[in-house]
Image (cartoon, rainbow, N blue to C red):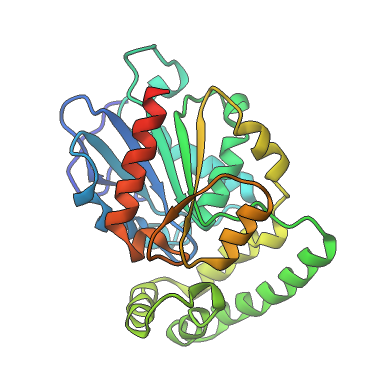
Length: 290
């Protein structure tokens, strides 16, 4: 479907943002999916470091950014369906369902945290949805919890956050949110800047998102992802920050090959955009030659 595209502007969807569309045929097309609390703007710092021949897009998930007032899907599949709807708004989207060898622009999906978890679900639905995705880059994404006791404990913890997001002043909640161990690599200045940025969101909408996408509600995806990782149809790459002890341990423990971003914690693309972009360029260049 043809689109009237302007660099850095919203397309004909309030969710889809053209970070840097390429006028001529691009070498590949990227769609970025942010994490909980984030927005399409989170990826702007990468643009200057990525190849000029790449088409770059990002979306706002329901409850975030320009999509903060849209209805929140009722389950993970609803969020995945929403991402697929945004894929249909990309240029040449008809080629995703009817790919022509050597003519289609390869499409890669890049997700962080919640975005990575949603893309894990999508990766496992590629065949049934019959869409041609060249690969996935998953940054700081959790496969899910195995034990019922783990899920119960996580749900109890998340419910406390859900109540706070719904009832309390958002800056106060965010201040405490970024004190969690997973964000320990951030400086006080970085945390303050994130609190300021994220305070533009709507707390009640975020509470609804968290209630639906809590890790406690997610299926354990690792066995299926292991199988999918052997696929010749698409590639899956995992990315972890050097100082993200939790996810480095998680991936190593489960024998999942992963790429390390030097000098970064959990949010690698925000903390080290230049290094992250270099790694992304390396991975996707390899993916296209294999």
